[in-house]
Structure formats: structure tokens, C-alpha cells
Length: 143
Length: 412
Image: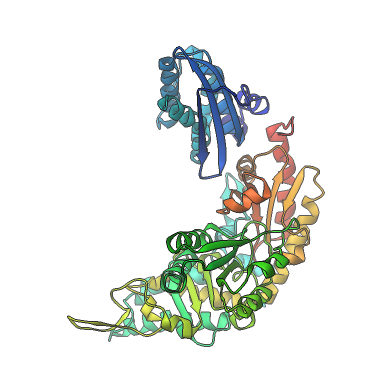
């Protein structure tokens, strides 16, 4: 295995170079900030939640490839989901990233996230992958 | 003096392979590697005369006491102190600064007073002063870094006034390598009746340093960045100041007599060394000082300057390279902070590790400086006595390869 197989997979690089849902929402119903104290990476997350559904999500971040890609994938998966569904996605992702044993297979809809499993081989970087998700988690809790 | 190649042989860790590739250790500003002489001093103590120091009447305790106090004398000579009574062992430079804040600051800083630091301080020469100001209603004042990465000395002249009680500055930036004109700042401090503390954590391992020449009141540094083991810091202070300062910790070894009613505090330096100290690591630190002294700090500086010049020349030829701080190697130590456009420093660190190269990436415990530089973090390569130009050439090649790994497309 190599760095390119584990960490810098095509999916990740694609999301890194072309992050989805970048920007801000002026009439956001929730906005939260996340910081990774290890590297100083910052993330601002905007949500527009109406009728219990994530109608819009935008991220503004300055971070590494893993952080950016993870946030980008997350935004795609959560957009249009109900709060319950969004929370379930978060918990499934966290379970995958924090599980110490064998790789976990995710449901078909979340398959793309499996690209991030390679990050687990580089423990310092797990935090990079989790930052957007923890920020979203916090945002939804404040709702 | 030993040749630079022979010096490498004293560091067995440099034989190490990282994933099959020879280690290139460029993370010296974080901690240096240790020569056999230091490792042997450590094991020799544990294998042959391990015992507690002071007050022991047996042979081994005497040997240990001699070796422990011997390091103190070596350090006093190394930094040009007048007496070894001025040399206090701590856990690290951070603890040394905290002793000054607790034992001097708390008794000498009041509401409306000012403490002057720079915007490129490590958090360790930052946070303790910030907290003290908060507690006392004093003001923390920053000398800013100018565009060229050097301190703005004109600003220093305006900011250091008769309100200033202490000027606390780094000898050398751990991010940009900027070497500070300590004598100039020291004069300003004295002119205004302020005390002068120098954070030598980065400077003392790499630059000839004399407390008499700088004419400072306090100097702190850490042995693990200068070939010594972890767990030993040094607080040097002028004797008349240290004499007036109360101990920070109370307990064994820092007393001269104890009755049920009253305790008399021990004399310098032991009054600041409560409890059993880090005997083994202090003893091994003596071997580190011997090693550096044998090379000579002028030679250390010259070697690092040559490496830095070589590295900067090659790095600045890369089109997407930005190096922070002074662009003239003469004005800086062997620390190069850089960013490669489009590559986050963490990704850079990870990719270089694939080539066996150890650098550091992130904010380097200098978040305020990162704000000034307008970056989230930087990648940092830092050199020491055992590094070579060949390693630097390999490193520059790896930088070029890093760009390919990330298949860099857009400037972000």
C-alpha cells in the first residue's frame, strides 16, 4: 500500500480540487465553527433547515486535502436529508472512522465515504476527516 | 574539531530507515537527535551509580551529586553566567518562564503596567504573560514583525516605555528563524527600567549565547533541542533577582531547615528545585553541553548558515514556493518555514514522510504569528549539526514530487 492508495485516492483528490457546496448562506438558520487545534484548520458551516429538512448546506474552510474532501462529501450526502437521516449518516461515518478493526462496509448510498477509510492508517489525520462532521453534529444539536 | 561526517556517526538514529528509505531528519526545531555520548551518559548513570542526590553519605550518592552539579557548572560556563548559583533546572523552557511569571511577575506587575513581547513568540512565552496581565489588570503589548520577517525595531522603541516592567522576547523565531537583535532590545529595556527575559529555546542550541553580552535578566532554554534528553529545561537569572524571588514549589530539597512552626528556604539555586529532580537527564545534559562545546557554537552557526543558504537557493527556484521570514540567510537560523502553493502543509508533511523526510507542519504553537502571516499553517524544515547538503538536495527533489502526488490543479 502507498500514500496514494491509502490517503490520496482519486475520489478524495476530486473533492479536494473541486469541493462541493463551498461558500456561505446569508439566511442560514444554523452556523457553526469548527477548529482543529492540532493544525489550526478552521471551518465554518452554514445550514438552512426548514420543516426538519436540510434545505441547504455550505462550507467555508481552509484546510488540508482530507479535511476539504471529507467536508465536501458530507455536504453532498446531507443535503436534502431530514434531521434524523442526517444524524444517522453522521453516526455511521464516525463509526467507520473510529472503528479500530476491519474496514467497514457502508450502505450503498454512503459508499463514496469508504474512500476515507484509508485515513485510519494515519491516526493524526483522522481528526482532519472528522472535523466537518463534528462541526455538523454540533450545528444540528444547537437546532 | 571532528569532521561533520564523523559527527553523523555519533547519531545512530540517522541510520534508521523509514519505510525502507533513509531517514532525513529536518525537525530539529521541535527536538534534536541525541549523540551516543548523551545516551551513554544516561545509561551509565542508571547502570553504575543511580542514587538520589544531595545529603547522601554513600559513594553513589556523592557521584550522582557531583555529576548533577557538574552539569550546572558546565551550563553556567556555556552561557557565560557569573555563577552556577544562577542556573536552575526545570522540566523545560515553558516551566522556566512560568517560574518567572509566578515568582517575579506576580510580585512586580500591577494594574496599568505593561509587558512587552513580540508577535512571533511561541505560545510558551505568550500565554503565561497573557494570563498574568488578565489577573493583574496589566497590558500585554506586541512588537510586530515587519514585512521582511524581522522585528519592527522602530516600533519597539515606541512601545518600550517607563510603563514597561518586563520585555520578554525570543532569541530566534521557531517559525521563521528570525534572529532577534537582543542587545538592542536589552538596551531599550534597561533605559526604561524594565527587566529583560530572553526565550532561548530556539537560539541557545544554534547560536553562540552569552548572558553577559546580551545583558539580560533571565534566559530560558531547553536541553532536548540541543542534543540533550527531554525533561530538562534551564532558567538562568541574575543572582540578585533570583534571591528576591520566592520559590514556586515547596517541599523537599528547597528547604534549609524545617520546624513545626517555620521553614527556612534553601539558598540558590536549590530553592527553586523542590523534590527529587530529573537527575539522570540533567547528568546526560552535561554530555550534550560537552559535545556542543567541543564543536564550538561558532562552528555550529557557520555549518547551519551554509545549509540554510544552500536550501533557500534551491527552494526559491521552485515556482510555487513561498518562504516566510527573512530572505537573507544571514539574518536567520537554520529554520525554513514554507508553503507550496496549493498544497496544505499537512499534506506536504505527509507526502515528504513517504520519502523518509521528517519535517513539521502546522501553526508551530504560534497562532498569533500565523494570523499575521495570513496563513493557517506552514511546513517547516529545520537543520542541525548532522544535516548535510545532500539531504537538502534530496528534500528539494521530494518537494517537486509532492506536487505530482496531489495532482495540483487550481490555486486555492
